[in-house]
Length: 576
Image 1 (cartoon, one colour):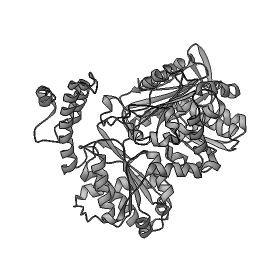
Image 2: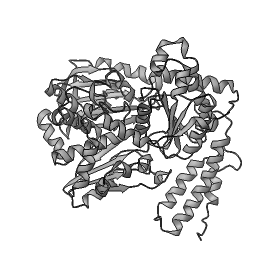
Image 3: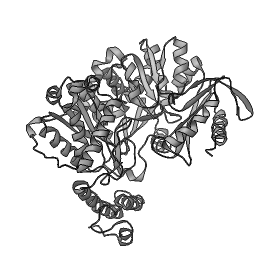
Image 4: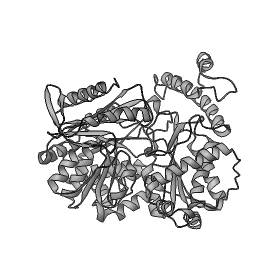
């Protein structure tokens, strides 16, 4: 029997008895996770700390179910939906209200052709009949919250395909394969343990268009202000189970002629080889549910799983694909004897992925370009490439060499909508990717499948393939950083507008060199492309008093000079 641990001092610091609003449950949970992390799962002390964590989560559950207030921060749907703290922002009542806001999109769509087009249905009756896919990632309370969403949808006559815990990419595939009208996914993507979120995709299965997210925000805020009760009369007969991974596999098989990835052949080849090893770090997220089943036909014998146990605390880390979080994968691969090594880390809802071959890390800045080269040159699929403006120009160099068009919108995966059926690859530097013929959502699994095909087909590791491609278009060294400033929002945008004086033909100091700005892209902040092909981009954060820098040099050493040049610009306009 586990010996109890004394947390009375911590409890008094973070918990106000019988007062959810003033209690900082996740502040205490983080401290308890720190205590737990000093032990292995086999230790009695680990179990004792886990018992206390579970006890605090019971308080979170009570708040999640019974909070009758409004979110501490007003609901706002952005690029990837709505996010907030579990219990304080995202709880049963607020989730019901946001779901009601979505239902009102369909019940009041008759007055707007723009709205009908964005929703992808002609009327409320069609939306009810086609229904929606509902799922969640590994966050605490996901099952409770999706349960109340399902109850409200069926109360309003909508069919529901319930996927349970699943990734964003597989839920998007399920929309396409089942021809549903929408999906709802309870996830805050890669945010820390205290967050939950609400993603809504319409019938195209991609991130919702601004006309929809703006309506949802307005509807939700009005519903919360009116504070009317939401009545539930659920109809369980309208709910059916959904195997989202099977839908994903089916979609990939159907898309083979478009993207050239033969799922069954890839799995057969992987099962037959003994010189390839694949390490997948699930970071305790929803991908742990799928990965072994994804590696079919005996291919799972080549698979190593890392952090694949259930843990909504993520053992205290920020659960994002990052260099720091990649260390477990890198160390695992370095210890392996196989000639070819593929390592990936996937975020909790499976829409972001980063790669390594044990020797070198490959972020999406480079992998997106590699995927484009692979489809265009190896699979012989001719066509354009799309990447966000803050992403490396590696793909630009390839498109120029191939004589192909490039689409370069502002940050946000929904910005790819105009070319989603024409671009061979759509990707962004923040580790999101999809391929032509696949879902319009970013999807870690399709990135992993592409990496497997690259290594198995070319018989080379990913970094070796990247070096081969660099012989075509040269080397690119991207990086990013951020700095806190004193302004934010509209005030920050107004100050940053002073950067307009750095136009084409302007000379700037980058280290010991004078460089001339050759071209400016100002669709999302200000991207200044220099005459040697290097560039720097400055854009405001949309949510906090920060300015974000993106740079790309043509040498590893050149990045620091570009960061320094960006900061000099901010000093000149008075932000630093």
